[in-house]
Image (tube, rainbow, N blue to C red; front, side, top):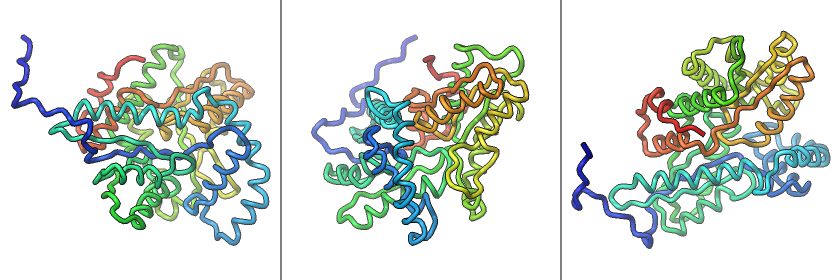
Length: 361
């Protein structure tokens, strides 16, 4: 029997297109160069590697290394890597983040109540659009409250703290700034876990699962070990995600392994190394390896070049036969729904319910 249509009194008024939004959500991602040109890549690297959240060395020690060595050699190599993943639309990270913002805007508009409008923007910690420029735009539009959503599932002082500190520094120095609040790390959020599990299951449904037991490597971005020793919860949050994802996929520890990628510099980083694990599995006779990057919600240089290209080469050169990079969540509908629940404070959806509702690709 069809449900009765709501009465006029029960139907929330449609938002006025001329009314300024009351609240805004800003999705914050790491950032990207404007192009693959060496100068653009150099500018991007200079901004990122000048951030004390990233490099916690004394400025007097680090600046000569940065400007005297790294910025003279690294931009060309990094530009060549970006060239392998660049699309006609631009940087994959920026393209997918923009699409996330558009899908989230649509989802929030469809669930609007009492005529309230929610604006959705995206910002980059390094590069454009910058966090201050986006917040200034929202202030000028009359927004009174902004919800910051750093797109980092796991808290790290190198990423999450850097993004939020940039936002609150702008607020501190801006007269009439809107109220800022943040959504915290979400590595154990049921909707996020369910979306990841559904992503893996759909990939296996399309590409098959090895006749022997599956081998899934969950690769997270690495950080220096000293950060963990100082109290950063990043490692434990990553391992919690891995545990929840194993449970959701009904996999054991030897079927779903953990690795940490993107090592930089000479200090000790989190282990085991993703690249070393990839090589080791191939040398042990594993013929097929599927790699998922649960610490990245959007495909980017680290997933598309470091894993899908470099990781594949390492696996095949070490004796493996088939290597697959499982795409990030990007603008997956289940992931967008998970964001909605987090920014609205409704995180009660059970993992299995959301996974079952995840539409096919």
